Length: 445
Ligand code: ADP
Image 1 (cartoon, rainbow, N blue to C red):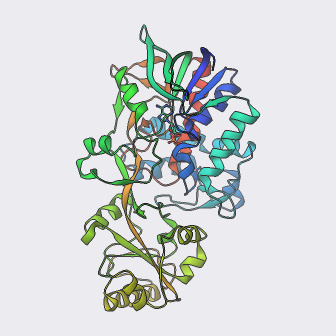
Image 2: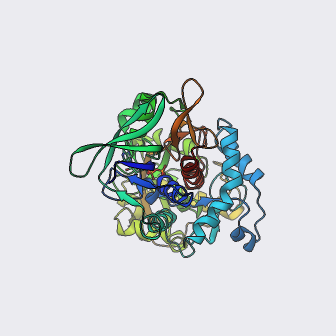
Image 3: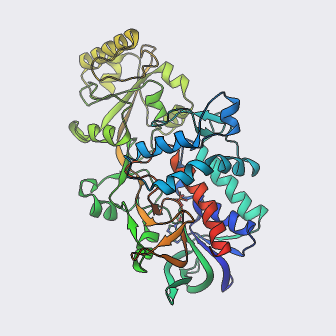
């Protein structure tokens, strides 16, 4: 790589790649450094959708939505701890982010519902392809093939260079193991969160010690550490989201399995919670059970309703039984208890009233053989806190002033999601603020 660029981008996830595109479109020379062997970061693992309000795809499906409603849902979901100015930008610009990605060739034409949204606004490919890989590969194609921007992999940024209070470049360890300094008029931090750094997570929230994670191994919080070292303010660092249904050593099981009708049972075979409660509440309830894990239990009609389940079958995460008793035996639960649990639940479905736990949506009875179970436990999923930014993505110092030449976007930042991130808002965040960061950095805002 060269010794100088207009804009240096650290991290090739959705935020960094979005920033690369917009910086280049604004006329800057751009380079991207990525420490892992591949691009895409955690963005590749995103499955729910990308939230946006007021899109043409919503209009086509007859859905009435507005930035105001998106704003209200996001603030409520984050327990009003979010930075209102950042959420306003997210809500106002989300629809143009969908247009922007669609013009690059992404398919985001299917619109579904995720927890915490008042209307359907989670955009995803039609036909069940995963949304994260769709967005990451579209952006990577635009960056490397269409715009000819170099993305250096296995190249880790180890330090930010500061002169006279301004960020003027980075130190990197390149794929050849050697160290270099690279100068930039502006640096965009897009290194993602720290979900894969259990030491860091547990130092902030001790009860998370030893937790698994749904994140890619590169999500170690490097950017937060580097930014703090040069005087950046951090916000909401102890706000860490766990995903309630992670299949140990396998994959995160999408919320849609519960949404489409699965129940959660403990090791004995009893239900213990309204399965559709928010991620934090369901996670805590699972940890209260014996063995600190639970089983998602469903029948063949749920399996047939959701393509993703076939992936979990291939991964070996799904246990099968021809009858409820056989399934109970296969997971070492009590056959009488599990059978009674299913009977009681099916009566609740029939009467549209779950008097035990108050589950509001009871989509189908669980009565079509064979029966299935997936063992799940909560894992660290998203770190809401991070570097403080303003609405132009300028990094704010502990003294409350923008640090010249320094911008940040994506999970490395804090404030957008407050105390709890809604499904579909991570992708909306990284694309929308990534675009702004590239533009701000290129123009020296
Ligand atoms: P976001 O969703 O905010 O875009 P991702 O996790 O998708 O975050 O992407 C962040 C990317 O940054 C990952 O690919 C990660 O490997 C990379 N990264 C993290 N730390 C460094 C670092 N020190 N140097 C270069 N790349 C890094």
